[in-house]
Image (cartoon, rainbow, N blue to C red; front, top):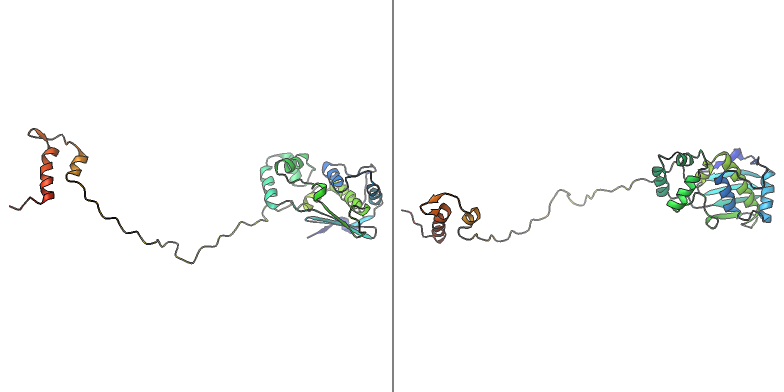
Length: 243
């Protein structure tokens, strides 16, 4: 959904300086759209912006638009990915200067730096990643420049405008967690068939006695374990008969 700035009325430029845009976000945005400040298009754009020729300015995620004289100009860029903005918001929660930028209350240089250096996702897109268009038939024209200067002036009044264009407002929860559907094709609690047991291997005669070792009980001259070994052997051979 797009918003219309100033109820569609002309954007008024208060500053009389040659360069429009006082804060770092505003200045960087204007120079990204129109990098050649001394060009004829830039100079004519400043004249149009200061004359109030820019009106019906709209802000939507990824696109800015406006009427300049009898033409319609647009400036577009891919929004910041949700996963990156969510991570930035989480990591910056304890840094006041970053929080002020994230909330659109200040043109935070720290936020610009963090997004560019740490996340490789500039808050203000570089010039070649911007898409400019105008119904006059020329992309790099005075109408696009005038729109950029008017919006830069508005960013000085409301830094959150830049965030809304970049899709960086209230998007932390926009990306739903994946839903994993249960597998109903089979009973999850039913185990598979048990493997066939291996044949039992008989223990050697007297294995238990050998494992336990000497008992410490003497029967004559021998330990009890040694005395019992012949009995175990007799039982194994079946030599013991009932009497």
